Length: 406
Image 1 (cartoon, one colour):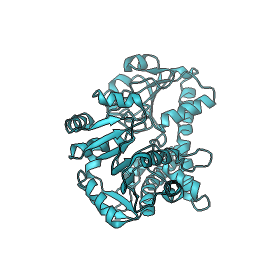
Image 2: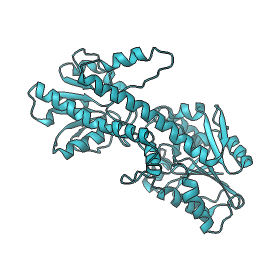
Image 3: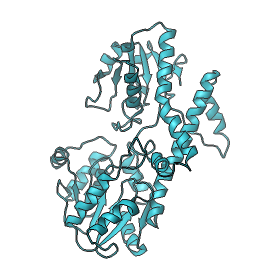
Image 4: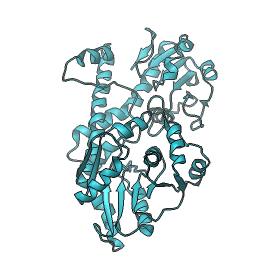
């Protein structure tokens, strides 16, 4: 039996696909309401293909509980936030989960940490916790790190088709865990040491953060001299060895906007480029705020409540708002006492900010300036409804020639 700890955006799809693949699975989460919802057949977030996967997993006997199970295999998918002041990883949730596993696990249990962690986390925080309790690592328990590699909006496909990395102290145990992941993963699965696995995941996300920062800096440069950054990137990317990503209103999600800080926090004297990229990407909501100000001045609009932000999620076609650029922008507005801006997102069904609308037409009736913060398919399919608005398009999805860009 496999006990999955943490039933959020990573843990739940992992638990479901393992169950669908014929494994006996129990999902554990401290959130009683979440567990009750799952046991009642109700999913806690939307994702393409998740309902079908949930149905198949339930047919295969998956169960959900708030209790840790006596088992031989555990997969930990708990949050790993960073401490904003120091930029270092806050390991408290992983430490707590590991200790709870040690309270109930069988001798020789395999503990797989999927949560993204900074390089050296297992050596600095997890091994000492285990040794404190006089467990012998490699005998009483086995430690592994298998960082997740999926993104909201395409989770199910990527669970099956993305390659995986497994870090293990013992290559033989690593190969056994590789077999477990191979029960659903069709891509290559690499076995390495734990520190390499920790570093690899952080490096992947840091690489993308730096690439996005380059695009965002280009957008700022082009704005100062009235050049079309999208045209320039399109032409530059025709070169066979150039692949510049698209600029945007900021970087969100729990990976790209967080993981690079782990390196900055742990290696402050060695991360000049990474720190610069983080600062550029974190500056983009303030850049958007400046563009809104320019448009308001141009059209003589003095009331900030006539501005509407379209999109609360951190990326298109999902309801995940973690580290969302829109939430970052609202914080910047709050700092400048700019209250009353309207907000709408077709995927975010719960009210999480002030002046959030649940009906698109009601939202449109209240605003003169629309800021497209997220390129949901919904807005692409409803362009005709915003043709009489002043549109600031931060995602380059608007079809109107007179729309404003970053």
